[in-house]
Length: 357
Image 1 (spheres, one colour):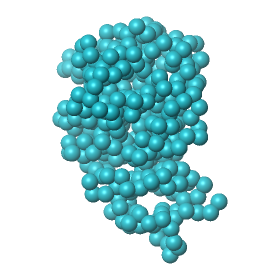
Image 2 (image 1 turned 45 degrees about the horizontal axis):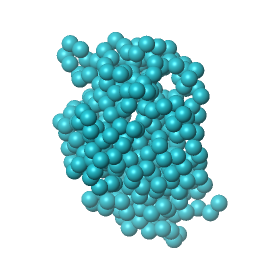
Image 3 (image 1 turned 30 degrees about the vertical axis):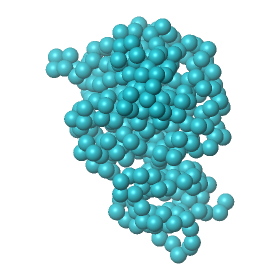
Image 4 (image 1 turned 90 degrees about the vertical axis):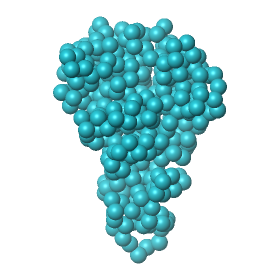
């Protein structure tokens, strides 16, 4: 296959060309050959969203066969790969959702699915439907194909045994668990917290709960840095505690992302979207975000997180968590990268070495 050369990318302050072949980066040196001009724009590894439910009225759970709409939206906003996230709903709907084909869609690449529940606490469902919450059941879980991530409450009966035998990457969340139950889950193999601070106990000096356990057990922490779900000071605190190596920026975007204010359904739960904030109609609980991952990176930078680290926490860090050959603009890595202007607006998007935008 002929090489594709992307000219004049600004990577870590150095102007260079990116040569790709068969979807991989094979050179990062200047060349005299012609290629696709990137005009000296800043280049970053393509963003990877491990927690997103949908956008533009399309839900990864409910709108079977319409994933391409999400893929195109994600790519247009700098996400080159992602894990569509299902809500806690009935078994048939979840099975249909994670069984739908996704290999040959336009736009951002789907790497598998994230099941947020149903193995969560009925005491902390957030905007998820408590009617469909189940106790962890590894045999029941094994019938769901293509699931690479699952969110589990560590304190529920059977959680540790489930985690120990689960092939997917386990996140802890939607929980009222204490420090000990979270430590036991980490020892069993759990690696990450789901939307840290949200739908879980706070970090208290005599009851450190999930966050304290995650710190002690070197777990990763998902963070919705949209300025709504947690205060900017809490984002900065998590950054100082977990560092860019273990803090993962997520969007947790839901299907009302990109829609006008109004009343909608999220996983069968009535929600109200107003001024970019979506809440459940009955309790007023936050019901996911209406920000894409790039928006959350921009917010993190505005909160004081260094630019390079903010972009890495939405690319390199989730890639390392998931064991992917992505998240870096380096020789040998997948050729997924983006360029942005000085205001972080998307200029170019390259996915598998091919120019999307």
